[in-house]
Image (cartoon, rainbow, N blue to C red; front, side, top):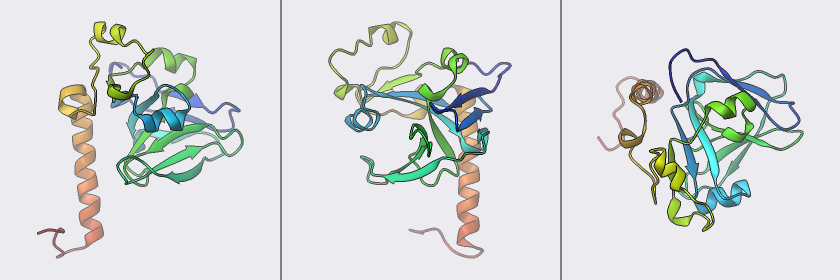
Length: 186
């Protein structure tokens, strides 16, 4: 996804009770072939586009229902569903959704779907046998059996934005601890 002259992306659930906007280019779009994503999506893979939560906003009066579910890491994830049609719009694998949002790319409107493609194919060691990723390799997309290091996959501008976000996260954690308290393990 290019960063020049970005026009916000729009999306919605099936019944359109929930609508949203993405205000900046996605940091990265994963096409995940892990067995958890296969099971949760009911499909061969999940297509998750990562954005800073500050660059994602619900534009409808209807708000999603948040559901905590298990994850392979053991940390769990929060899934946001429409309360009417129950479509999953986004999730958060890192906590409470304060910092990052993983938008389900299939919920983007038609124009948005044309603009978003996977930046990386992950956990391909468990992909369905009939999924052919040769076209992705030809397009120059990393096809990886497991996860990856950001600096090997993400665009430079996305890495810079994540660095800013990580500083904000660190500052927020420091403020939560309060003045004069040491970090855990110090």
